[in-house]
Figure 1 (cartoon, rainbow, N blue to C red):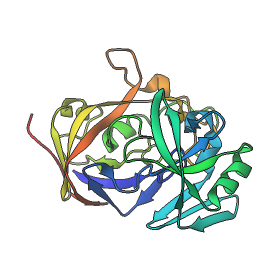
Figure 2: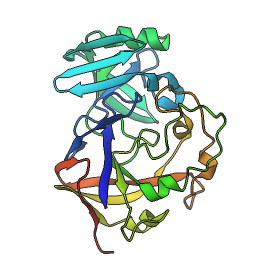
Figure 3: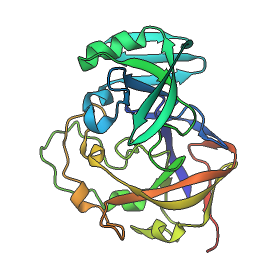
Figure 4: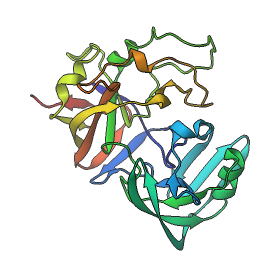
Length: 260
């Protein structure tokens, strides 16, 4: 197997960013959901499921520079902590974030039509699930017949990792794993990705975000009903896991699953 694509999201909830390579450290992918948008009144982290227009914002993190672009407007600079910390809610979990100064709060507030602040989060604090997520081309291909609500040609191919916002898409072509759902047997095993290694822990539970176009945020697929269900009846797709050996993973890197 090979790594077909890699990516992450520097600001929680915004568009998935494809990359040539991702650095995995003990705390997870470097730069992934490093920042979050917070409703300062409700003390709540904004999530894509409630703010689909966040997908219209393209964000890049070229440390130390953070850039956000939406509707031709760009906010760019070096985020500096203001000294203000907030205890906020993220999916019912209380996390502490550091508010940062710069042009981003104004840009996002105008785009969303509500006041928000940009804050820096601790690694993993605004990640739903484990550090790393993986999907396979075989399982993605099996979904391509899913009913579309529209025939809009702008809808991205399901093989693009952006819809499932996965850290890695694995190309299973020509491998013993080239069948839909083959990864179901990988739970509890280790996946070597280039220089790094990840222990796979569980399937990824999915929400309505996967039905949103990953660039414009509009609902363009009826997809949840097509996904497999776990023992609790929840829609699942792909696997999640934790880094057990840090390293750099390039697009095209070899991927190997350990023996069961």
